[in-house]
Length: 128
Length: 286
Image 1 (cartoon, rainbow over the protein chains, first blue to last red):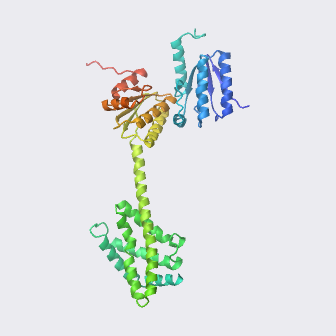
Image 2 (cartoon, rainbow over the protein chains, first blue to last red):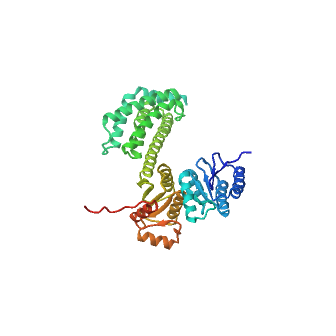
Image 3 (cartoon, chains in turn blue, red):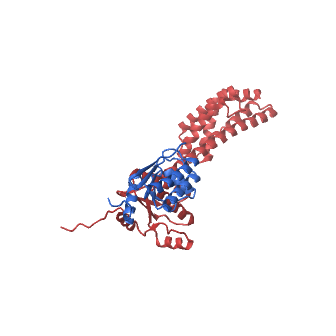
């Protein structure tokens, strides 16, 4: 079955959505990601949606849910690279994703994650 | 019907020069005082129209003015009424071009069919119908070309009125001038978001100094723009809130708590610089 790959980068997980999301794919991602956060003790999750061109209310909510779940598992989540059209659609749908941190690109998202990790300052492998 | 056709067509063909002369006279009387048309232009237009009219009448008959037989006439009217719409003629003046053809045609019909009253009435009725259809067509085209002008101007205004300027590395400003409605908000939002992508800006300052009134709808539009920018990873600051606007916002109960607001663009810029880790220092005087 088609899956969205989840890459581990140090204490962060990187999810890059390169295909059009459909409902089943989003559900699978939700399962996989929560699983991986627990298994890898991830402290941060970066979701790159720069290739995502079409969203509907379900996918919009799933993005919000996935971010919320990661937060519950104590992993800071940043959604990066949202396209203008997608942002407008989500706002028009009334899904402004409160509580989800956002960033313009992966670089800036990483920076944001690192700085918030530094602010918390008590990562398990923070002694580098 | 065929009989009708041949009569009117015949009259137009045989008296073409005379009809043109009378017609030009009619028009110059009707549009007197406007002085926008030269005699020679009117004469050229009339001659061209009448020759097209005559050949269309002969080949296609008068029943189907929208048919292929009248294409030449319609094209000529298109051109004429577009040109006149652009030149600032009134609809009445434009339509007069066609309607003033009635008098010369009726005169010729009367002379030709003086003995046959019934036939004359039929011919007059028939000619009136034809000219009316052509006149209405002219007015329609006139209206359409005026609407095109208005539409184009609206679009120009939309584009002109929403510039997004870069103040510094990573800081954009969006000075809004004029009332915000849904259509404008859409354009503003799209422009801003696209510029955020292009420049990689992390902070956008929306300056509403030039927005005359802020009601709940405008506030909602602003908040939408802010929310969309946030989703893309850029923070927004709203600046240029005048005292009256601040009062209105509170009286209306609009929640702007989620957005950073500043009184002036300068204040907002200072905050933006601070957040992006830059600062402006005064150089000591030498």
